[in-house]
Image (cartoon, rainbow, N blue to C red; front, side, top):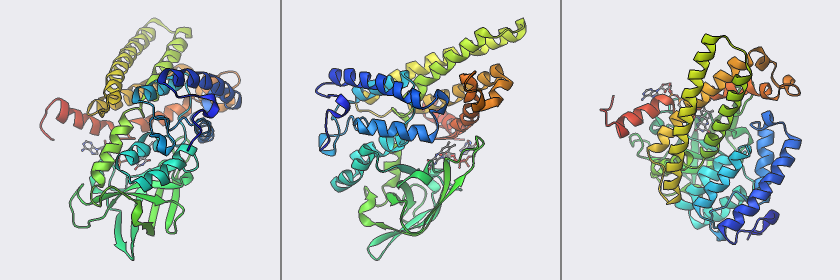
Length: 396
Ligand SMILES: Cc1cc2nc3c(=O)[nH]c(=O)nc-3n(C[C@H](O)[C@H](O)[C@H](O)COP(=O)(O)OP(=O)(O)OC[C@H]3O[C@@H](n4cnc5c(N)ncnc54)[C@H](O)[C@@H]3O)c2cc1C
C-alpha cells in the first residue's frame, strides 16, 4: 500500500489534494528549471526525470482505487491536476503512454492479478511501456495487423514486426495488438497482449528521425514466449480493447498539449510584436495569427466540452477526433510562423540557448510538429471520420 501523503500531498479531499499538489508543482518545477533549460523539456532525459518526480510523489495514480496504490480521486480532480501541470509547462512524463492509456485500460479490462502485477510498476515508475500497434502495412488501417500469436506448449508464441514504436528502446514492456485467429478478417481475431521487452526473440531497432533523435523504433518478434496470463481480456477481443484505449488517448492525454499550444502562440505573438516588418507582410502575418488565435479559442472550448464528458465517466467520442485534427494542424502553423520570425537564429539551435532561449529549441519543435498530423491517426483519416460520423457523408 502506498504512502498517501507522499511528498506532503494529502488527498483527504479534492481541494486539499489540489492545494498540496499545486504547492508541490511550484517547488518541483523550480528545481526542474534549475536542472534543465526549457528547450530541453521535450527531451527523454528531462521527461524521465519528471516521470520519477511524479512517481515519488504518487502523482500518476490519482484516480486508481486505493487497493492498487492509487489516491482514489475523481476524474475532475485528475483533469484539474493536468491543467495545473500544463499551465506551468511541465514536461510530458516519459511513461505518459502507460499513465494515460494502458493504466485505465488495465483497470477496465485487466484481471485482478494483471492489475496488481502491472499497475505497481507504472505507479512507481520502475516499468516503462511502449505501444505496439502499427506495422509496416498496418498504420491507418490498423485492423490489418499481421503480427501473430499462437498457443503452443501452454504459452503464446509471438512472431511479427511492429514499427514507429515510441521509446521501445527504453521500454520494459509493450502492450501490443496481435492477430490470434489467422483466418479471421480485419478487426476480428485480434488480441491485446502484454509483452516483456527483455524476453528472448525481441529485437529493437531505432529509427533516426528528422530531428536527429531516435525515439521511435522497429520491433521484431521472433518466437517470443508470452505467458497465457498476459493476454488482456478475451482472445479475439483486442480490437474493442484497443479502441477503448484510443479513447483514453484522446481524452486527457491531449489536454496538456492543447493548453501549452496557447502559451506557444502567446510567445509567437510577442515575438511578432517585436519584429519590424513592412506593411504588407505585417498585415499578412497579423491575419495568420488572428486565425490561429481563433482556432486556439475553438480548441479550448472543445477541450472543455470533452473534459466535461470525461469527468462524467463518458468517452470523448468523435469530438476527440476534431480536437486532434485542429490541435495538430494549428500547432504546425504556430511552429512554422515561429521559424519564419526567428529566421537564421533558429538554425543556431541549442548553441543559442544563453542569448536566445526561444531559438534554442525552435528548429527541433518545428521538425517534431511535422509528426503531429500523423501520430495517433493522420489528418486525412481524422477528416474521413469527421466526414462520415459528423457530416454524414457517404464512405469514399
Ligand atoms: C511521432 C509518432 C509516434 C508514433 N508512435 C507510435 C507508437 O508508439 N506505437 C504505434 O503503434 N504507432 C506509433 N506511430 C504510428 C502511427 O500510429 C502511424 O504512423 C499512423 O497511424 C499512420 O500510419 P502509417 O504511418 O502506416 O501511414 P499510412 O496509413 O500508410 O498512411 C500513408 C498516407 O496515406 C493516407 N491515408 C491512409 N489511409 C487513408 C484513407 N483511408 N483515406 C485517406 N488517406 C489515407 C494517410 O493519411 C497518410 O498520408 C507513431 C507515429 C508517429 C508519427
